[in-house]
Image (cartoon, rainbow, N blue to C red; front, side, top):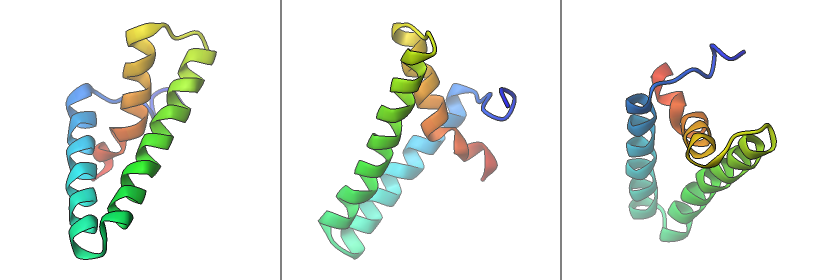
Length: 78
């Protein structure tokens, strides 16, 4: 399972860029509220992942990086 979520930071950055582009696109095409929902879903996922990382013993920057890679690391599969 660990190998499934082992993602490098540049891949996670690419995932964040894709989310930002999708949020702007959805906000422009449908409504700003829909764009805010997309952004809110990813913010919520990050918050949950950060909480889990802290609960399993992550500290400070390491926990934030783990949550960031979990939230946006799916870009590796694109």
